[in-house]
Image 1 (spheres, rainbow, N blue to C red):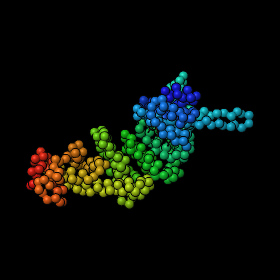
Image 2 (image 1 turned 135 degrees about the vertical axis):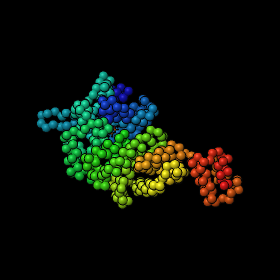
Image 3 (image 1 turned 120 degrees about the horizontal axis):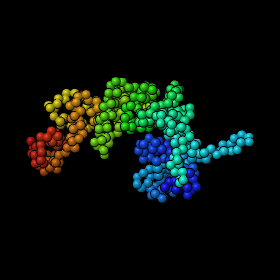
Amino acid sequence: EAGNLAQELGWDAYAVGGFVRDILLGRPNLDIDLVVEGDGIAFASALVERLGGRIKAHKKFKTAVCILDDGRRVDVATARLEYYQYPAALPTVELSSIKMDLYRRDFTMNALALRLNPGKFGQLVDFFGAERDIKNKQIRVLHSLSFVEDPTRILRAVRFEQRFGFRIGGQTMRLVKNALQLNLFEKLSGSRITHELRLVMDEENPLNVVERMNDLGLLKAIHPLLKLTHERVRVLQELEKVFNWYKLLYLDDQADCWKLYFLGLTMGTKREELSKVADRLNFSRREERELLALRDQIGDALMRLMGWQEGKTPLSRLYSILTPIPLEGVLFLMARSRKESIRRNISQYLARLRYVSIDVSGDDLIEMGIPEGPVFTLILDKILAARVDGNVGSREEQLAMALR
Ligand code: CTP
């Protein structure tokens, strides 16, 4: 449809970037990126008119995001026509604008385009040997200043490397080392680094990426306190397992995984040190406060769990330790605990205990003639604990318990 529309408007349209790369790799990718040699915003409005949906346009960048009624998202960019004046007798040539657009991108594998206009539909546009690189599982930049222009691309390279099982090419690797020597990371804003780190954490196997970042010296370039130790690796490994397990089981109740990994990466640091890392990464005051609080809660819970005796310690004890802690903290505790029985009980907490409720309310207590006051909380907590431990059943039993 996009191709027909472009044809009618007299422009050329292309699918580009990760979408095309993933077609060649046979991987699903629902984010469609289009480039139009013409007016991207006008094209996007015409497209949503035809397919149903709405657009958000950025006039300054001549780009638009189409959100189609079926939920799909299509990004449309404009490829500028650029004219190059050659000296003397040579004519002015119009350098194919799609080529310029692709040349500005990060890696050859992302600099592919697919023609959409009728008659040419499906033709691959590959100026930079991307097909060959994909076949050889190589990640290569398009030119030697790529990382100077944008050092976050180094993190992208590592992320793609691990995601696709590719390898950063030889010359590109030299440019990575060079960029590190030039301390290019120091000039990067905390927010941009954090954005990239979050993308890493959202990968299926973030630990592979993190380990590679560590080996290449990228972690310590971000902040010297971010180095992998055996203990951190162990916990991060467990975190990945716990997190993937949780994601699968509780699809609609998701935890903020970056918080977990961040805590894992900074494990063993002092309070002020953690603050320094948070500052470097430009976390908001609130995020920083939340992280510190979460860490304190985790530490506190670990202490309280130390005396845990399987079969002896009542589950209500676990319940009272875990309920005040946000989900991320509970998952972290599960990954952090070395005792199998604690891990099993925490998983029980997540599956069942945290949903336990009682059928008695404050109104019931008033009706029973119990004088209102702090004692209410004590009574209700007692009933809840008994429910958690499976010592009390029906509402009648719960009411009876209130009187005891
Ligand atoms: N890009 C770039 N430099 C960056 C970020 C992005 O050149 N620092 C280019 C890449 O060519 C990429 C395109 O912009 O193909 C879109 O970026 P993004 O959506 O992040 O990339 P995808 O390749 O689609 O990544 P993912 O599969 O993770 O969505």
